[in-house]
Length: 196
Length: 268
Image (cartoon, rainbow over all chains, first blue to last red; front, top):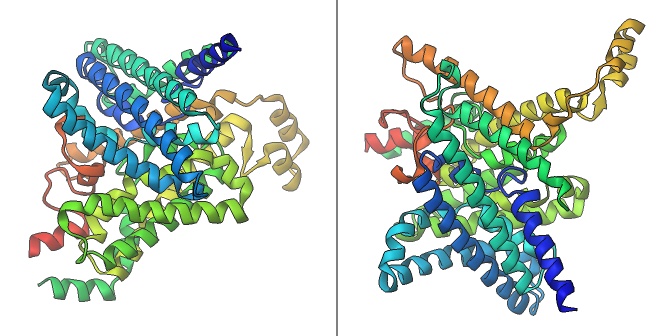
């Protein structure tokens, strides 16, 4: 029984981290993916912040959904409630980090405001509801999704750092070559579909 | 001064429409709202549906935000805008679920995600919060239709290359409808579509080509010494840029001359 649910959790985790990668096949969170991937250092910071926020947001939003929205039969308000919960949560986390764990705030703080209106966070929360995951499954799914994001943004940043020394046609300099790179990464991630 | 501007704009509602459709086309010129642009343009119909849904939300939220612009305190304006936008997204989502379930299913999660589309928040911030409701309505309509046209074009290209279809009608059927010579339909049936273009990687490649074209035009304009609004994928690092919802993209690069909203501010 327990081993069954662990197996199911693993399948969900691998599925959302690799097979249906949040950026490369679902297209959530494209803005930070393209906007904060110039350097590996900042990209990994962003990845860590996203893991932190999405995991927390998945947990809190699934709690709110189960014990507030479902209880009072107002499921149709989920979009409004989730975006408010996420925004408030990010603000709250920022305050807590600033007061209690300044070290962590120094490394993650700058990324937090960027994440509030990131569609990956809201998208994951809504996916959890759509797939009817419980609180535990939602949290694991959120964590795995965010790990997928962190993985792909780090890979892209690594490639972009190397790409600086390459000779790129003038029209393709800047964003176009990054998009081509992302497309090639997406093809590579298509290969994971055989995993499950 | 602002009174005069407002009355001028009242008489000229066409300007914001044209502005959204051409001069500041959210997709082709400003490169905003990329997530839905890439995700739902697997076919022309999907692109069009997404565009029209966004246009409806944008127009309505622009009107309400413009009506409330003097009531909403400046400090909490972003959360207030988000609540207004989210309400309209919920309304439109319910409407689609009831009357267009097929479209609702194919757009899926991207309907609720209109809430975080930067075109809508950006327009609220850059235009609706500074202008009267009528101008804001037309601005929303123009921007929304500009987005719709862009998504339809991208969707058509991807559908044509990736599935050999136009608006869901296959090339073979079109050949029969227009009574094309047998050699043409034979040649068509011998070709196989490049399926990757309707899959995730294809979206990146189409967008890459699009931004490369924008780069070309931009470079040519810059070489001539003309000012240009073309973003071709904002090259800035988001960390060094403090603008909420990429609202700064609605202004020219030097940050002075721009969209109607900003001009009014300068006049004041």
